[in-house]
Length: 254
Image (tube, rainbow, N blue to C red; front, side, top):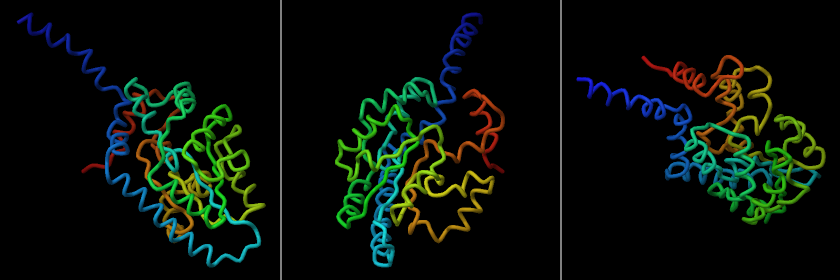
């Protein structure tokens, strides 16, 4: 009997390790990396973007030069390999690992993104890249975009975070000199502050602005991370295990 008890107890540390909270994200990352549905949704988003851009150009009466604003991560560059790396380390996110990843300049393109932005450039429509990557990641980010030949990947068109994740001031700065025809992103805050920064119900705001999605706002799929996750948690300086517990508690069931 003692022999079997010892065997069972010896397995306890394994099961504890196997239940690492970072593994909650495994399916999300695998879905982005392997599913045809992910690629189809990206192509669908950028196909709609192309059609809507044609309509926007036809209806345009502005005297300013036209432009598109795009987010970078999970909008034009795919960072799922970084997310996979973190999961295998038992982490959800580590800032030092992120900097190492960006410096590798290995992020691939999001399906459909490059072709769409090249199409926009052929219509003399500029692209501005607004990202919440840090300034220390600026050079590597620009190099990654230029590696694939993204149009307007230069100092004049790349705007990273300078101490704030609020993108609205950067959008307003662009609007001073350009006519913004379209915004593309994987996060609702890539389009407007009304979704997350005014203490409003996000789903209600989406319903109120439903006529803009697929027309002015082009949304890319990202199941791995985003502002949508922040309201799930209550408390400060939560550990990954605490967040995992709260995620489980927030699931709808019957």
